Image (cartoon, rainbow, N blue to C red; front, side, top):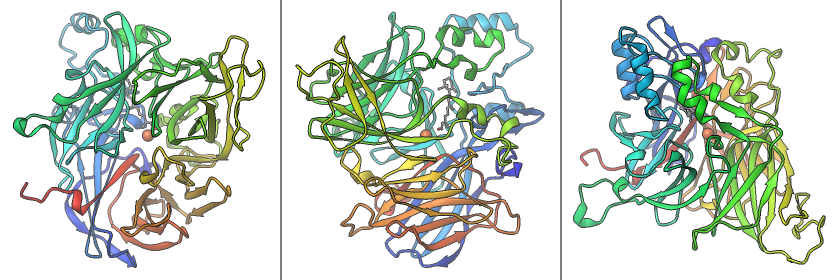
Length: 526
Ligand SMILES: CC1=C(/C=C/C(C)=C/C=C/C(C)=C/C=O)C(C)(C)CCC1
Ligand SMILES: [Fe+2]
């Protein structure tokens, strides 16, 4: 079972024809690219945490009913340095590495200390991002790596911090209707301030500057000051509605002093993250037009969350859905020494993911009584006015046990009905995929014995009329060595199998991915 996680996976850079069973839609043409850790030991050294593994990209290319699989390690500087040294020489989330034991370690530590935040890894293992016609492998540091979406070759290294003062960023950008990519990052102790920055990357550059990168045209949309200079919140995603950006400042925070001394103390970045369960979770809403933050203070109880699902506005309220936990045990579960046993029922998730809906009234009667619920929509979510004018929000529970949520992205920022997600019960590794209807609370599921699915991705059909007109793609690993892994294609409406594409190789468990329709891929010659 451990092979699902901790064993190094081989790359298969040349396309392998998959065995297709069932009927794939004829309109399904393009490439599904997914990202995740594939190499966990290098020489005699091993990473501590599953999020540390070297990025292995894999893809399924759909062409006239045929499916081709390939996989390739991201040739990041991190990968190259590690492979050359035949040991881990670059620090990751849960592993601190000491590059050159021959060099005076104090000199090295001093050089790190003189920059509050040291150089981070470019092992971009989490997601795939798009800017215009270009695609990048992403993680949560200031680096992203351009890739060729057809061949999975590694191209340029982009350092966000050259263009905007961010030290860490999210791996879950948003895309607007003008084709801009929107993302957030944290600027740590820059000019005496720590702030959360929302930035925008245009899809193309002006004609006369043809060769220059769109990162040179990046724009800071807005910035939100951190409540604390030395303890900014950690965040993995953010939300958008038609008129607002939603940023949640959770009490799961980075400790900057600990980070600045981590290398010297021989501890990991992960140990510089802490959950302050006695604190509150603050909501921030930035008006896209005025770029100003809504001044009312909205908050809820302490929680830890990674993924926003979707958000929208209705009758003067902002509604947003996310997957929340009661503590930070999720990241703890992914230490390799624990994960090898995590399919044993005695190593259960101590905190289950809960899909919560918050309903925040932006327009409300300013003379409302203290203690009154200001939510006027049909929901069990509440927003209660407090004496000092702040508003205490409590969520409606939509459902439990789902993670890696995806939606029909055409409905991003809009009122929506369906969440596609991985279904997790007692293990952090999903055993099923699910389609949840928010209105009826009905949950359709797909699962088979010995099958371990990844994040399900929704693709609308070309003639889609309803939100769930389309298909869902998910990679399935199998724990029975006689059954090869496969890509599963489900009808998004019925959640019934349309077909599967089997590939007889050892596949890795991945994190996130993106489907790129053929029309959005540059031709091979470009
Ligand atoms: C290296 C590094 C980081 C990496 C974080 C990673 C790699 C997080 C992965 C999260 C995932 C996969 C979540 C899934 O829900 C930090 C803490 C941002 C900052 C310090 C340097
Ligand atoms: Fe994520």
